[in-house]
Every structure is written in structure tokens, then in C-alpha cells.
View 1 (cartoon, rainbow, N blue to C red):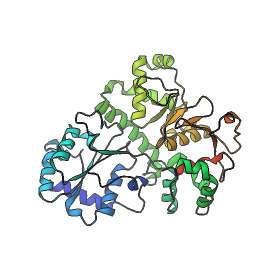
View 2 (tube, helix red, strand yellow):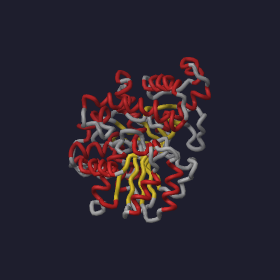
View 3 (cartoon, one colour):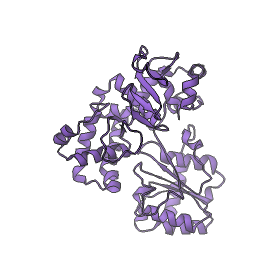
View 4 (cartoon, rainbow, N blue to C red):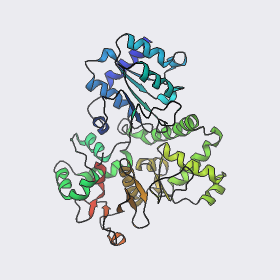
Length: 398
């Protein structure tokens, strides 16, 4: 057991706190049970270690970080470790990769109920079921979703500038003033293209030559390990999901023809629609529907985007044209905190009441002129005018 604590101290020692994700300030760290869900590679582990280093530096002796994929847990239970930890004064427990531990939800429920002085923070796959798990944790855990770097966060890493987030309402109402304030600190357009290509995952600057290789490895791990483990997808059919993902990536935004796709890939309609759902759940795609609420797993999406622009560059770079990159960026940044739907006029409908058209700096408003609450998000603009807002500014929502 001591080896687990030693590894924790080693990881904590090498963790940098130079840049901290915005989610750090949004989490209610006073809660007794906190969950953080998200796709692989977006920085969940770093967030836990940074929080310990910044906020619990005086409590390192009664705090521990553990990854539940450690081989130690093959012969020992989490309850065994927690009992040992609490009896020796433990107060703060940080658990990484809980989805890799059998019966994780039941044991977390028991820990919550049996150790009332212990605070637990856990991370897991974006596929993690909190509400529908065998032990319903929804009444006990405060669960947060973590996404890759926003454009704002990327700019902070690149420039060292402390930059504010802005609500969608603030951007729509005050984009003139906001862009003025930001442009006094830096030139966003200087960095925007690089962000679209290689700035979404926090490890982008660790080994740039291997960046897309790392993304493809993450994709394979999600498809080959997480989907079979957490959704029961037969390993024999994973190659069909990879085939489907490649078809989507070569046609982003993708308008699915279910009959033709079923025939091409060799799976029935029901299975195909389920695969669409799984690809979104795991954080590889974003599925848009005309109807904002009550979407079932077996409803055909009206349009499908890759989850972020870096995936476009990793999977099918020759198909990553600027128009697709713009729309994918907008969909990604808006979907984090807003409901985004397919629009019959314009490109996107946000929260059921605001229409957006995406384009270059000369994009006109004629396609949305009949809407009262409609805007153009235009690329290659440093400053906006009227209802035309610089596209990059929507990267400041989180």
C-alpha cells in the first residue's frame, strides 16, 4: 500500500501549476462527493493534482491521489484502502479512472455513507453512468463535465495572459467592448489557426511531432477499451465503428443517410443509430437534431460533427477545409454550456431561441434576415459590427 502513496507524492512533485483550467474555479470543492467526467486526454488527472498542490498543500499527509487502474487493486479492494486511510487521519481522497474498477459505483456509495468525514473526488470516462449505475450516485455526487481547451485557455497558455470568460449573453450584447479589451492584451487571430489545428488537447506542446499520433492512440483506446467495457460493444464490431468514424470525418459536417450507410458498413439500422449515439457519448462526435429535447438513442441525427477541430486534422486532414473547421469550432465551444440544435435556416440554433450563421469575414446576414434573434459568427475578423461577431470570441465561453 505504501507504494501507492509514494507514487502519489512523485506525481504531485512534478505537477506544474503554471496554468490551471477554468473548471477549477467552477467546481464546488466543499461537496463530500465530486465527479469529473470527460474524454481521454483532456486533463482530468492534472486538474486533481493541481488542486491538491494549490489548495491542500498544508494537508498532504491526510490527502491522497490514486489511480484505480493500478495493479494493486487486482488483489485489494477500494474499501480496504479507504478504511486504512481514514483510520490514520485521511480526509481527502482523489480517485482517478474509476470506470476501470469493478463495482466502482457501489463502493463509492458505501464510502460516502460509511465515512462521513471523508471528501472524495473521482474522475472517469465520458461514458460514466452516474444516474443509471447500480448504486445511484446522482443524489450524492456533484458531477461536472470536462472538455478540451477553449480558445481562451489556449491563449492563456501561449501568452501567459490572464483572460476572462464571458457568457453568451454578454458576447451578444457587448462584443464591441469585449473584443476591444482582449485586443489590448493580444492579437487573437495570430493564434486562432494554430488552435484549430493543434490546440485543443492540453498535451499539445509536450511533443508536437507526435501530437496527432497521440490523438489517434486516444481514439483507439476509447473505441477498443472503453466502449466494450462500459457499453458492452463486441470487440468484433469495433472495426465497423472505426469505419463509421472515418466516413464521418471525411464528410464533416456529415448528413447521415442511414439506408446507404447500413448497406456500406454491413450493419442494421438499429445498430447504426446506436453507434452514432456511442460515438457522441464517448466524445468523438457531436450529433445535432432538429428537436431540442427528448432525443432517444435510436433517433437519426440530422447532422454530425467531429467533437473538435483537432480530431479533423488527426483523422482526415485533407478534408479539413476552413468552412468545416469554422463550424466544428463553433459547435464545440457552444455545446459545452448550451443546447445546440440543427437549424432549418442558418447553421445552428442555440438554446432554442438564437440562430447563428457561420462564415468568413464577408458573410452576409441574408440567410437569417427573417429572424429577430440572429447573428453571424465571422472568421478573420478582429472586431465585429452590428450582429456580426468575430468567430474567435466564442472561444471565451469557458
